[in-house]
Image (cartoon, rainbow, N blue to C red; front, side, top):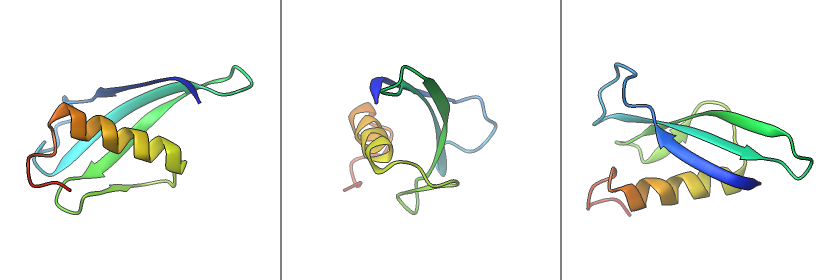
Length: 75
């Protein structure tokens, strides 16, 4: 994955204290663009939905932690 980027989709209408939606985009080694949305359940501290690459979800979790969206009790 190259040029990996994340952003928040805050206008989903879902309560932000229970679910966080994250846009992602990146380029593959073959220069193909990929993008999508990850769904993170705050109470369960996990991503839900289709299975994603482990490196993608690890990077997304790191993005969430750095953003402060998970609160101080996340670990």
